[in-house]
Length: 201
Image (cartoon, rainbow, N blue to C red):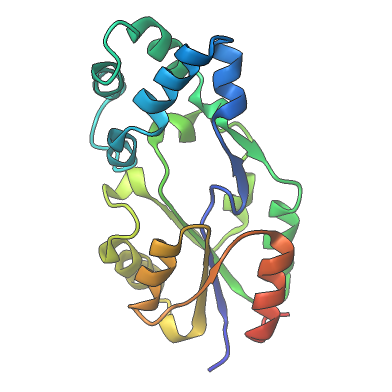
């Protein structure tokens, strides 16, 4: 069956994401860097924050609880988390190209509210799409099958005619269990090759 729908993850697929340079702008001390990295970005609470169930002060308290004595530094890091996201030159032209060729294009992404609100024009490609689902709005995160079903039902997507691009294998596998073909994204060039193999030109 021919593919007519392309579903994108956002972070590390259509937008750059990483905390290394940002944390280095907060502190030049390796020990403090490691503490903040563990308390914020590698904290299991980070994934829960993608669900959008806590307000900003509650999120900060979660992170601070993992690093007693570093609340000031954690607050400083939290203030501008949007700097962990940057634009990728190929994103908007790629979405536009697929749309012009007649494909339906969607995004499905785990995305925290605090960073979304600081995104600036980094995610302008979303406005070109036929629709998108962000985890913090739905209080669901990948790889929970419910968020995939929500996308399919909300936009009337036939899973057999869709392909999902994500940089996390667990998310690709979750989509596959619902009949959505997947591409484990490592680069645009690699993804284009695999899309072409599926008949997406």
